[in-house]
Picture 1 (tube, rainbow, N blue to C red):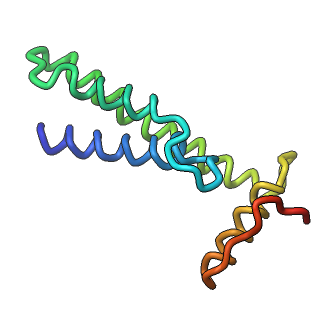
Picture 2 (cartoon, one colour; picture 1 turned 90 degrees about the horizontal axis):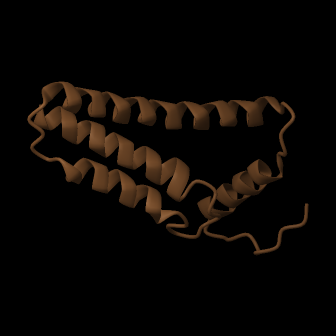
Length: 113
């Protein structure tokens, strides 16, 4: 049970860091750290929960939330790639930033296409 709980906790923290905390921060670190604090506090609140049904329910909730975060992010990326009524300027800026970073350059702070 402990290794399963640790895996769910790690997966949830990774999803929160990737999609919420640093999701659209444009290079700024930890713009919304209260989400990480909440997840950590919930997992550390009841480390020795005796009620196995409540523990399983909390683990299922954490697993489902991880899947939801990853799915919403994937859905958003699909919408960007198919250009369905979304603003592509952020995607273009992100793509140009990755291209520039791959050769050791940085984009200027104000980018005008």
